[in-house]
Length: 310
Image (cartoon, rainbow, N blue to C red):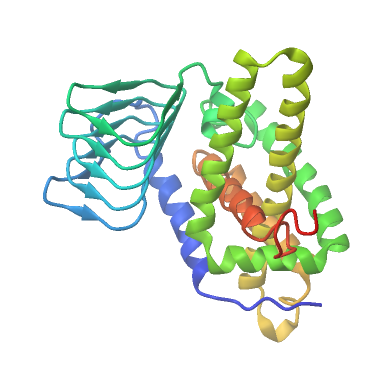
């Protein structure tokens, strides 16, 4: 049995998830495009790490030396972005001073570039992306009435399904799952952005294949993409359960080194959060992205190249 080496990353991850979810719900009735809760980077400011705006707009007039990501909000760029600009569920406006060193990806919105704006990479927009894909949620929960009985029943059904998946994976693949959980502990923020980009890439692939590929060719490719992202989501999310549970269980009880016990503890904690109105949907969106990124980073726990020996 491989024992997890616990780091300080899990408390940071949990606090980040709660903070992002709470901030996104400060004005739950507001819509993208409002300025009340925008993330603002002034002209004389420099953002050295990834910029993330959840449920709010992004206004960048300064410099971002990494990626800029907006979930369910708009992005107004009048400065410099060294990495990619990714917007899910909103629009991107590029002012004349905008300089982008990477790509622009938009799902559920459009890209408006004024004269003088420079994008060195690709520009991809899919305005008609379904909302359930845009929010990356556990089913169509976000955007529904948070206190409705339908949402409560859906959450309970999903938690029961996750319990079954956790029992199967943690009992049958404990060593490989532990390796993925170690990736969650060591690189939570990098895994979040990797998972977000992976889901975005699959979404763009779906859009392109649906539009241009013949049904005979496109249908098998769509099935492969769908199965791949589903496997990464299931594996990675259970690994997040394991990482959270291993951090919370006391070492003196000897449970932190037991993947099944730790995974069930993590599922219980995140399950309580999921049922909470407003906060639950966004928290599990973050968990989903981190899990997919960790599954890709650890090669589903194998730690060796995907196509080794081929």
